[in-house]
Amino acid sequence: MRPPGAARTRVNRVTSGRRSLVWLNFALTSRETRYRRTALTRQTGRTRVARLVVFVLSAAFIILAPAYRQVLHGEVGVPAWQMFGDTSLWVYKIRFETDAAGGGRRELDRFEVLGYPDPLTAPREVRLVIKQAQARELAGKICEKVGGDQPVYMRLERAESYGWTTVKDGRENVCPAPAPGVR
Amino acid sequence: METRTGWLRTALDWALRTEGSTRSSALIRIGLVLLLWARWGSELTFTKHLADGNLPMCVVFYGSTTLLLFGVWTKVSAPLAALSTLWLVYGMGHLQGVEAYTHHHTTLLAWSMVWLALTPCGTSYSVDRWLALRRAERAGRPAPPETGALWGLRLMSLQVAALYYWTAVDKLTVGFLSGERLQQMAMDYYTGSSEIGGGLVGALFVVVAWFTVATEFALAFGLFFRRTRRWLVPVGLVLHGGIHVLLGVQTFTPTMWLLYLAFFPADEVHRFIERLSGHPAPEPEPEPSLPEVAPDGVQVGQ
Image (cartoon, each protein chain N blue to C red):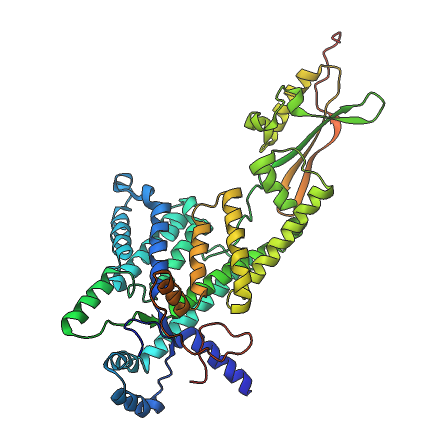
């Protein structure tokens, strides 16, 4: 004997052809089961078809609707599951260099040059570049700090969904030329 | 041909014809309502919407979700709550331009509410249940069973699987699989605009990127099957926990954790709760004879 309220799994396969068997069961089963089975027998015909239609349409929507936006690039606001698809695409990767004493180049640590020994506590605009204007401003400050005659090269890359695209290739000195007569 | 017919019947049984415990649906009901309030509670107070025409929607939202939380008239309150969350995402979000309401975590909440409305979520842990018990006691009838049709739960599990599938498909790009998209996020959230670098660190990002995609594809299909689910659920829980603490995704992680319940056989969840409560476990159903890779909860050959 199953305790009242106990769980059970049962597959409802009540078809019109089996109704006689169902009614035989109805006569033989307990009152609790009979109550449930009566409810199930009413789910023949239109109810079952309606449930099938709703399920198939809903499942098709769940599975296929994202393709409309993700594959066909549709605009209507059906669900699209592109988590983090456009996250951080505003980020710029920046690197400053200057001429090395023995030839070639050496990296300029922007935190060290600007007086922030711990990058984690540096102001946000120094740590994270999200606009080209911000990069130019940062370059200007570094030029001021390193002195007028020392070149500063800035390599700047913008985040893209496929990786990085180069904005400044770092070949040119970004510091303004010193005024005539000023050394 | 016969095999194909067998598979179709198995799929139909799993999708539409299985009955089982309603406790999973009820737990999801309670959890989803709490998540709705966590996400929108402070933004839908009446005073913020006196003049923008959304006040009736706020009334419906609070009214329906309150009734749903306590399990009152769930056959009405659940569809109303679903409609109000759809309005939040598509009406206020897409039409009125509240961009924050169009994000994936809010969209997932809204559609989960729709599928919840198709479950018998008020048959357990609810005022409706208490009223049914009282009626049965007064009539001298045994307690009505906590069972119902599980097709709404099936839709919920399909929703989770589709989400994993499509987000994995979205990551099948050179940018992601090369680890560079993850590097961009790491720079944005943590390290700043300095180059993260190649070498071992760069290789680690590549490994994490491939692992993420592989895990999402595995979750999309493997959660349906008992053998793979036992390994994938812990992996999924850790994955979402990690995403939450590293990147901050509002209600997305707890929503996904909660929806994992839809994959577990409802009667096993019921028996587990009974065991937790110290009650003797009901006699288990005979193990269904399933095809090797058939979804759980299906009974064939009856």
